Amino acid sequence: MRKLICTLAFILCGCATTAPGGNFVTEGDQTPLAADAVHQLASLYPPAHTALALQQPTTDPFGTALVNGLRARGYQVAEYVPANPREDAPRPQAGTALRYVLDAAGDIYRLTLFVGDQAISRPYTAHAGSFTPVGAWSRKE
Image (cartoon, rainbow, N blue to C red; front, side, top):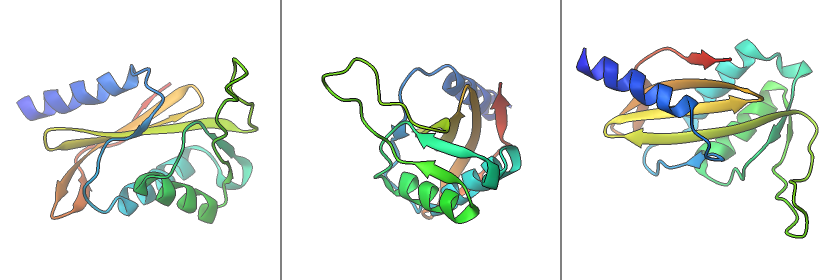
């Protein structure tokens, strides 16, 4: 029961984050996490009719696998374009804004995807370099 409450608190804290996103996990093969994320996105947003605009660099292992998986599934993905230092606002991109946070607290890992103004999140554990879901996807609208 205590582990469940900690997991739920961890997930809910992720819904309130104001960080731009990123991958804060260095261990394990993150390709299955990206495949799980693409599968969940495809169930919520039709691939051939959805354009996504990345809001962060995707040079980390999860980000690279996510972009490749999204494109393979049929999504139009606009790469991240940093703001011009001489301008106040970031450059506009066509599509729904997409960013992610992959982080950990103890032995629980959390993946949160921010799609437009919605957030979807799922907890995982890692065993021998492989990630296993320990709960369902939660969605905050």
